[in-house]
Length: 136
Image 1 (tube, rainbow, N blue to C red):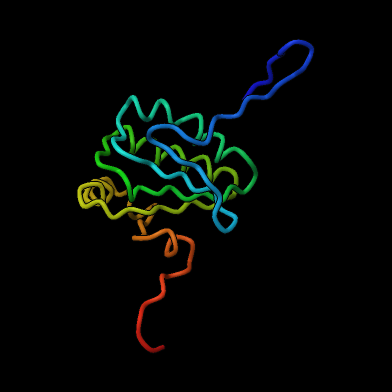
Image 2 (image 1 turned 60 degrees about the vertical axis):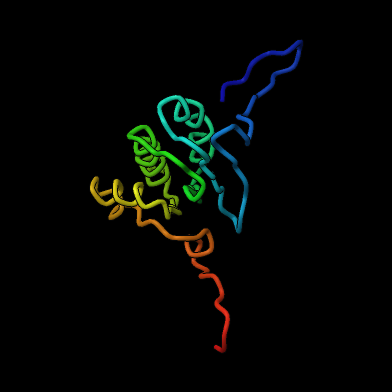
C-alpha cells in the first residue's frame, strides 16, 4: 500500500481483513484467506488487494481456504496462480483447502492440483490432521 497524507500525518492504509467474499485471520503462524460465496470476476477484483497484502512480505506463510465457496470460475483460478507465484517468489509456502467437487475437478483439469495440492481441512493443510475418535 502506498502512503498518503492525512492532515500533517503520513498514513499507510492496509486492506480491511473482511469483505463479503473474504475473511482473513492468523492461524499457527499462517495468514488464512477464507473465500466465501461466489468467486467471480467482481469478487476477484475485491480480493486481489488483500491477497497481495498477505503475500507481500518475506517468506509468507499463506493458506487459501475454499471450504465456504459456492461458485469458482477462472477468476478464482487466476487468484490461486497469482498467490502461488507471489509466495514462491518470496520464499514462502502456500497451502490450499478445498472440498468443493466442481472446484476440485477444475483444479485437476487445469493441473493446478499438482502444483497446489488441495487438502480437505485447515488442520491438514497446516500439517496437523484432525484427531479421530477411537483408540490410538
